[in-house]
Image (cartoon, one colour):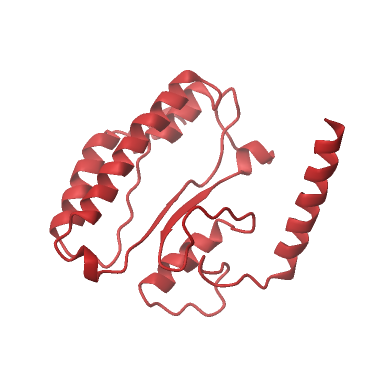
Length: 178
């Protein structure tokens, strides 16, 4: 539904980021969720391999930088315990859109910064459901039985360990081929 997509991204990300930065800098939120929808719209319209998509990522990266600056410029920042999570809910095809079950469409990422997350670390066991578990743990909400594990907690899920082992084995085989 192209009309619905346009409606959901009707407010430019720059305007959203400016309002969110003011809130983060000047107010006292316990948690915040900021949705910058331009990257998703560019992926739908132009595809994940387009220059427009890459340009939009660069522009929104600058907006995320503004949000991080707002947090760091809080008068009480040194006494606070912030955890920042950046993620997406799906990937895109090179030609645009999603909705299938390919790795390209289902793939996501999580970029995280905060206590318990080593700087520069790269993990292959993080799942999208871990974002909610991390956010809830950060604000002190117990969520027994929730799918997902906070990013600063060990992942004891045997199916994840199996997936990591399978992925490593596949990657080794693929690199030997060439």
